[in-house]
Image 1 (cartoon, rainbow over the protein chains, first blue to last red):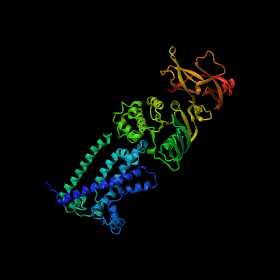
Image 2: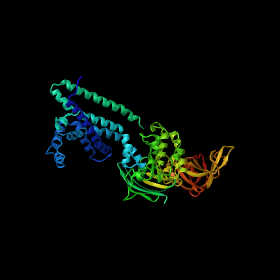
Image 3: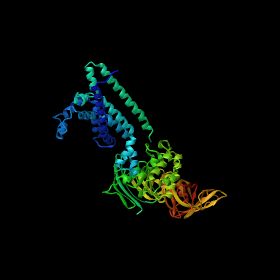
Image 4: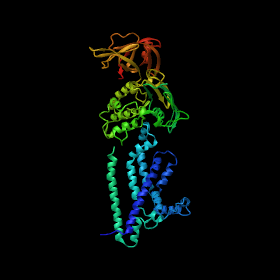
Length: 228
Length: 356
């Protein structure tokens, strides 16, 4: 029986923590963004949609590189975080979270935006004629109707963060317990010709991803159809 | 102050609305016009769903003017959309209660039990998924949902147009009942003259985003200068009351100031008010009381106005007591009979449509 090295387990834990933190932050940021993209008629809507979708097409290393420059001592964000006495973000867990959130943004925004667009304005107008104010309409009509979109966004954002490598390597490096996530550990094992250890982690990741997806889809099927 | 005063201007992508009307805030006011005339846009402006320039007062309360724009959820109105638009994530009961819960206790005047009774919802209220109901059932629930907010005015945007004929027939009696029993003024958008003639008391005519006429239903319908008088189904509306039942021939006599008509026997008892509609194409004119005619409804009338219609027809407007009747006859008949305004004639009604 294979036993995981403490370093490996630490990386697993760190990866889950990173994915969970990023997913939560993503939901907070992506929901209003998706709302605006779905319902706004402003001319610069297309521009913002393109910016949000950018991480889909640019290589992670490129994104990581620019984030590194931006968050570094001479970058705008770096100067800001220094000024706010937050220290610098590169090579810290917070930096990884920031990178992951940006990198996974389209995976969270697009399903939610699609769900809002599929709902259309009508149910919200109906709710308004039934005395529901803005927040009330959002919470009592838009959110429940957009649930499938939120579920997809959570799955995609979480999975995408777990599997990320390029941004992490550029931005976070390889610091145990701080930024050394699963994908980096697997890479290290392969570099060191420790194929067995790499196998256990990589295979475990495949299995874990499958189980998470399966559970969510099964639960989701019920959620999407059952609760009325 | 029981009045609705609306005046809106709005420029949409392909369409501009510049419409003003006053209507009594009692009974049913129909906003009538061809598709694209701006009826729905006007209704949406009244609801605050479109942000138009202009002003709106309902019963002396200002909902909108230069400095005020009450958002939709602060306007005490009910809105029934073309499609029922029930919330698919909520049960039938939760749909009905959605607005009720958001209406302050002191303003709740329409109890749930009453709405359930009025709209025949007792079989439906326990149902889970509203998507499994028929179109007519869904629309009844939507009407009930709107009524439960105890609105000061009920806006209905072609509530029957998305329904098939049988569902329409199923809903109409409920609408009439609401009209009779509920003291909520209704603004009813429609392009179906049959519905309007049946339900409305007051008529606002729209064309290309402008109000071209507004007034009592019977008066507007009988105006020869308006396009509706020249529709194929143009006709007059008369408010009559049940006066006599003839058991032998199975007929009922309806009286109105100025005359009476016989119709197939009705179940309604003596004194009940019935609205009848007489289409212009079903009325012929005689200069002397016809003898030996099978037509039983012959009324003494006086010609008010005659106007040409196309190359071969004329439209004749007649007064019978305080009601007005339209007749579409050929130009040749007019010349043969030498019909003129002011002449006393007899109108023969080939058919009388009951509107209740």
